[in-house]
Structures are given as C-alpha cells and as structure tokens.
Amino acid sequence: MPTIIFVAADGTTREVAAATDQSIMEVALGAGVPGIVAECNGAAACATCHCYFDPAYVGHIGEAGEHENEMLDFTASERTADSRLSCQVRIVAAMEGMTVRVPSAQ
Amino acid sequence: MASAAPVITDVSYTDLLEDPYPVFKRVRDTAPAVFVAAANLTLVTRFDDIMSIERDPATYSSDNPASLVNKVMGPTFMRKDGAAHATGRKAIEPSFRPGTIKEHWAPKFTEICERLIGALREAGEADLFSALAAPMASLSLMEMIGFKAMPWQTLAEWSQSLIDGAGNYARDAEIDRKAMEAGAGIDAAIEAVLDHHRANPNPSILSSMVHADPPMPIEEMRANIKVIIGGGLNEPRDAILTLTLGLLENSAQKESVLARPELWPTAFEEAIRWISPIGMYPRRVTRPVDLAGVALPEGVQIGLCVGAANRDDRRFTEPDRFDMFRPKQSHLAFGAGAHFCAGTWVSRQTVGRIVVPMLFERLSNLRLRDDAPPVIRGWVFRGPVSLPVRWDA
Ligand code: HEM
Image (tube, rainbow over all chains, first blue to last red; front, side, top):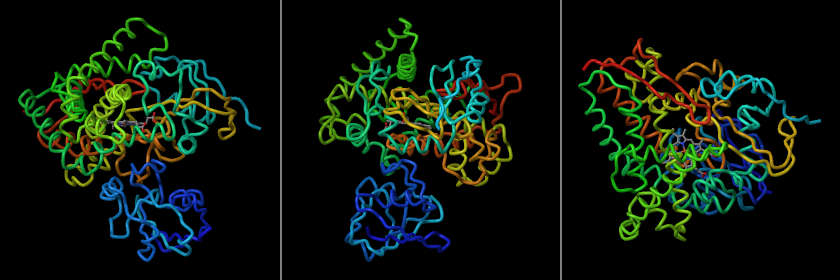
C-alpha cells in the first residue's frame, strides 16, 4: 500500500494509502480527493481526471498511449510535460511518497 | 430499511412528451427511484444517484437480452458490459480521437456547414430544423461512417425508423416493418463500401472497424453502425437547435458569446445541460440492491434520466434557466462511466465550434418569430422539432 500525496490547486495536501490494483483516479475518487471529476470512469474519453505527476517517478508511471496523448490536448487546465490522465496510471509499490498535483479545473 | 419504489400513475405519456421537466422534478422530490406507469419504467432522476449507478456496472448492467435494441439492431457493444463492451468501443476509437476530429473531420464539416448556410442566406427566413440542423447532422454522420454520398433524408429516415423500432414496446407491425427496411438499407450501404475501406485505410468508422485488431465481425459491424445511426444523428441535430434557441431567447448571453468567441464551448455545455438531447437511457438491475434507501429487485429495468439530473436543484441553482455564466459544474448529458458518449468531442467541435458560431456570424440579426414560436418535444430524446427564424437577408 504505497502512500500517494495529492496536492490541490490551493496547495492543501492529502495523503492516501493506495492499493496496487487500482488507478490513481480510482484511489482519488475512493478517498474523496476534490478536483478529480472522472466523468467517463476510466475510459480515457473525457479528460476530467487530468493530474500533474512527479517526473522523478516517470519510470513507474509509464508513458501516455496514443489515445490518451490526444485527449491530453483537450484538458481544461494547461497541459505540461508532467500531465497524465490519472485513470490511465496504475499504482505500483514503488510509487511510495509520490506527489500528484490536481489542477484547478477539469 | 429500504422501501419499495413509490408509484406515480397520474402522469400521461403526452405529459412526458410535451414537457417532462415538471414530472422529473416531482420524481426527484419524491424518492431516488419511482415507478412511473406512463413510462412503464422505474425512473432515477437525482444527479448523485445516477453518478453512483454508473460507477457500478456489475449491479447496473447495460446488457439486456430482452431489449428491443438488440432485436432491432443486433449485438452491439453499447448494450454490453466489461470486456465485450471494451473491445467494440476500442475498435471505433481511432475515428473519434480529438486530433483526428480537429485535423480530418472539422475541415469537412466546416465545408458542409458553409454550403448549407450559403444556400439559405438569401431567403431571410427558415425553419432551422429542416434547413440546417437535420441535414448538417445527417451529412456529417454519413462522412464519418464512410458511406457513399446519399440524400441527407435517407440517413435521417433510417435513423428515425431504428429509433421508433427500438422503442416499439407496443409491437406495432408497421413500425417493425420500417425498422427492418431501414436495417436492410444500412446493411446494403455497408456492403457497397466495405472493400474500399478494406483496401484504403482512412479515418472513417467503417475503416476503423475493418482494420481493428482483431477486425470486427460483420454482424457486429452492422449492429454497431445501426446504433451509431440511431444514436449519432438526433443528438447533434437537437444540440444545434437547443444552443441556438438558448442564445436567441437570452440576448445578453448571445452578445457575450459573439463578443468573446472563446465562450462558445461553455455555451454549448450549458445548452445540453439545459435541454439534454438524450433525456433517458436504460440499465438493468442484476441483484437486489438498495439505491439510496429504495429497494430495487433483481431484473428490474431502470431509466437513468440524465435530463432530470441535469436540472437537479441539489446541484444546479435555478436549473430551468439557460445560463452559460452559472458556476462551472460537470453535467450528465453525455452519460457517465464506461458508456460515456464516444461522440463527445466530435459534437463539441461540430456544434459548439463550427455550426452555431457560423450561423450567428453569417445570418445577421438572427431572431425568433413571434408568429411562429419554436416547438420542443420528447423526453427520451428531446429537442426543438421546429425552430422558425428570420434574419436580415
Ligand atoms: C450532443 C450530442 C450527443 C449527446 C448529448 C450524446 C449523448 C450520449 C449518451 C447520454 C450516451 C450514453 C448512452 C448509454 O449509456 O446508454 C451516448 C453514447 C454513445 N454515443 Fe453519443 N451523444 C451525442 C453525439 C454522438 C455522436 C455525434 C456520435 C457518433 C458519431 C455518438 C456516438 C455514441 C456512441 C457510439 C455511444 C455508445 C458508447 C458506448 O456504449 O460505449 N454520440 N451518447
């Protein structure tokens, strides 16, 4: 159960112990982390679970697939090099202590 | 203790067709789930309940062997769950990607729209249903599917016949016959272009289907194309008219969006929240379950009324008003969960960025007619069926 640290747009943080068979989006929804909407519930179709990920963990996070990559161009908050759809990022044990920044708008 | 769903018997089907919103409000204020006799269905109308249902597809299934959709259209991923759904959905995905929409479909749809608006400009008045919205939705869907050019009326008739057939619970023979006839026409139209798409990969939906890995079996292609014709024509058509109506009835908001075109996407989302083109879609309960205090038995059919949820005053203040400046909140017009509308991005682009902006830009002083008010109808599908307007030709 790695601990993921969600950082809201206003800077408040929330630590959540995450099971490794879930996506970051599922963990956030389960814990009631504000700012993640996830309209399509993980189908990578709505771009409302956009988050910024800590680049130090990129080896564990993986790369965006082709479809996700295009969806990321349509996020409500600015896309950066750290942007991913959190429904497409699976939790692994090595994510212990990873921060995930939640944007101000979805 | 959960109690059984209350029953409403004093509402007629005509009430629902003409103006479902008072009924929706009554149901919403009565209980999380209410059996409405006129609809012969248990209706769910609160925003949060629909959201939680859509996050639990094992309990609330899209699969229903008894559904007329399966009978009229064939085995479609839209009425399946889990892996069977995901495979079909993934097969069509390349045609619906935001990048493909922007680079490939948007220029084509812009051309169609320029042609339609160009043709009516001199007239000075028109009913936007038949003069713009219906042909626009039909011709763009035709392109997207990858059919040979045909009159827009043909695809529109097929679409209506399939919808009528899928809702024909009274088993009217003439409605059944027309749905079968439409089905045969669609199968033939697919057959006519399949070799071409096989030999020439392109962004169309039929091409995505034949080049998917694994390729989609022909029976599934036929069924899924029928679902896309039945469910991809009305909604953009109705959204075009609803957005136009919302702005014509609210001139301050119209002036704002014309002065600041970056507001078009917001105006579009508000329009489909206000009058959602799909007002209701079904789910089947797979085990006895307690929905926010109402006991739902196994096997019961429920109707998720997103048109009601989008006017839930627990979430939206003054929900009956068209107000693009209300606080930004997600809505349910495109559904939620695994079946979240595949056409979301193409509709946002077509309706909110191409058609309605061009309409207001090219037809100056566009206005409603006092002598011929708009007519809005429907509850499963809802939108203006007539929108007579005038402009300065
Ligand atoms: C404003 C326009 C539109 C609205 C409001 C809308 C709404 C919806 C809704 C509510 C659903 C969920 C239905 C259910 O779960 O039973 C849906 C599904 C779907 N829509 Fe749309 N739609 C629109 C436009 C389109 C267009 C233009 C297309 C195709 C060209 C399309 C294709 C689909 C497909 C294929 C599904 C099934 C997705 C699945 O089961 O995974 N839609 N739509």
